[in-house]
Length: 331
Image (cartoon, rainbow, N blue to C red; front, side, top):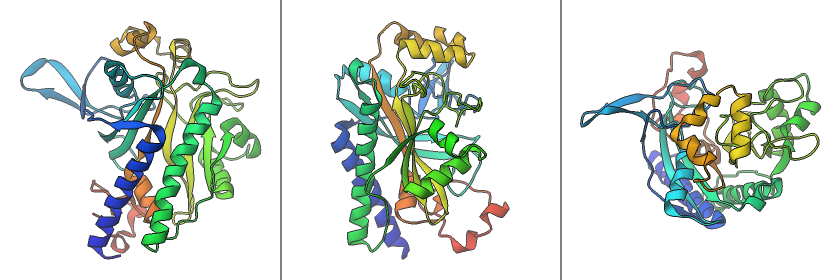
């Protein structure tokens, strides 16, 4: 693909998807911070082991700031400040640095997402509302794929709908496989899967994947067998021959699930942080939200083998994994 044309397609995918997403979910675009104040609890702790990049501001020597990992909690605070009502929401172009990322063909230390959040009513804290929202996101992806298929001779063979499965179900289907192997098997079968219940312990005593204790609700019981009002949207990537995560999202914690998850995760001391006290005291709205990888979705839709073909970042091409560098059009 000619380089200038490739840049045109990258721009098209990003602008088209943002338009589709904001329309279907009724979101307005807002500006987002690159830095947040350290010690307030606003920054995303991801799996709890990643250290954010810290910086000092010359004119504010008394405070420390961190480059965001994501805007999972900031968005909820922003909606409170905006006085948003149920079914009103926001999205933003989130830019983050995650220095603990293990570089692969789909992972970069530079993270770009459509970070979105929407106020919901208490009655909509349920799986049906979650699934309906996921369906709208998937329809947005399909719309872009169909436009590419029609206008740019790129054939993305995505299924017409997303399959919903609980991570406990998938574990029972493939009890001898690890989490990533289970994702590959189920995603290869269906093409597009939303895997519910990410963060809480499963029947084997392990979580399917790590999830912070203070944004997604992964502990609320939804049936007698399953827990969790969150999940990951996975697509089968035939170029890489494996499943890739396009979005991590969910209905956010309320006071009850926050306190329960902080206890499970053994970090109850966070109750005293400014953001957490705001939620416990009822000053933050109930929301649903998530992040959708911009470069990863673009890479998928344009059928690229490496995220560096659609994103400017840093790589370690001395590793065997990147031995195909000369075959790739790295930015």
